[in-house]
Length: 99
Length: 99
Image (cartoon, rainbow over all chains, first blue to last red; front, side, top):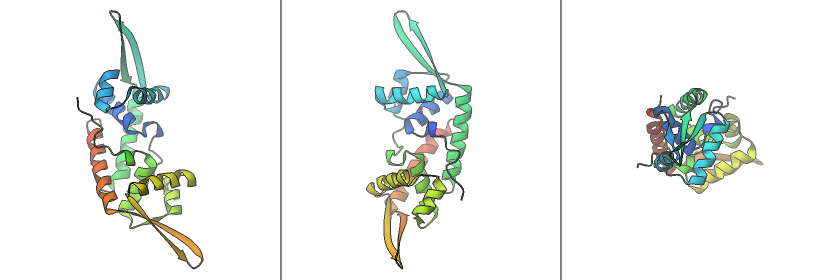
């Protein structure tokens, strides 16, 4: 029998991760506070999902100082964009039969 | 700022749960082994996700004996069907801007 979840990527399998990638697909980059507000996530929760996506090399992090203030930007990588599109397609295929 | 994950239902926020609901939306019921094979899940993993969906009253379980063999069927409840459709709509809305 066919495994219908074959192309659903585990790395994106959480609403916070879906949200992060969604935001980074349409915006060049986002800052931590922006992600936090848009996703309604706590610092710790958001940080752990960011870490997982970074480890998978689906997002990259750019740290710099603006004056004396640290500033962190998050970007989707090319691989991240490609894999996220595949994931969305697999999700749509899975759900399409049910609406 | 708007929380873009507001209508994403936590109870469905795992690929195994999406898979279970997808199957039970298009089939009147499914047995444990069918779900297991279609989802490529282990017994323990599948059982814990079934339990969570049952607790939320999104699926119901029917146990009976066929001769001496126990037989368990899983059905989506009416509430489960309604909430899953809402979840799919929210997911589609979240992802639509990105493809």
